[in-house]
Image (cartoon, rainbow, N blue to C red; front, side):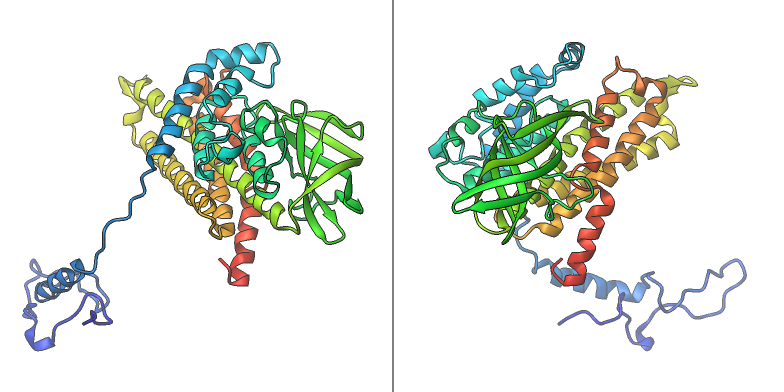
Length: 422
């Protein structure tokens, strides 16, 4: 038997024990409307009865914990990067104008983490996309100067060109492949870079912006528009028809503008499917990095406000400060949960376009709120370059705008809702 349509349920009028006798002025209470959520004394047995019936409908609770292998990946990544990618190491790299922390990258490669999601037959770990995202979270937590999108691009090569001769090098970190998805004012799924074919041979012409680690990359994974639509192409960066112009970014990492002038290319897969596959996973990967960035920014802020004293007590005990940190915690958890959902669905091969957009929206919108709150609660200390917080602020800002900010993600979600696919 289902509960009555009205909630809370009401017994027949004659069975109510609610007193209707007039009261004195002292006894009178505020009138209760018929839509009130207050539970009368006569209604309590019914509530208990329906609650008891619903207990038998519950199944076993859903287990959201990571698998043993996934937890091992997260723990190992945190240990390696926690030891190598320290604030002191960052200062040393910045003083030397070093873009790529080869020491940290080599350690991740030797531990098998760079190729953890690649097939075992090419030297990878054989785990899913979620395992790579757990490593990316730790990269964000330490703001490690490593090409964190390279493992995702390598997964695309393995997915659409199994047995490719570069896969072994991608798995051990010796061959670096960077995704080239961004063009000024263009959607990643609608590039202006053109692809021309002559039989089985392809050439690309056009310009890509903000390619991560473009100067250090060996190969570029490029989206381009062909006669049959958008496609995904692998380009040797050493080709003479490739020109790289370095670009400085908000985060301090150097990216590159790359001009292709009829460069030979190898097409991966058919149609637009490979492009959508790569764009979704790169977007989800950015959200995973954002989880680590905001989590560590929040931890630093919580520790600072607990130790910093004003008027004889820690500033964390002031209500306004506590509320600001609490709001930042809520945003951080929303970023973490939506990113995990998107990464898990992609890992399982499920439709995840809306979930990816939701995760990136939270990484962009919630991420900037957490970063701003952290800076605000630190005062002048937050912008001191001898203090680590500023790196998390600029990383959060960079991730916010990469592959579409909050507005772009809301437009994608709106399109999905209008099409009935959300």
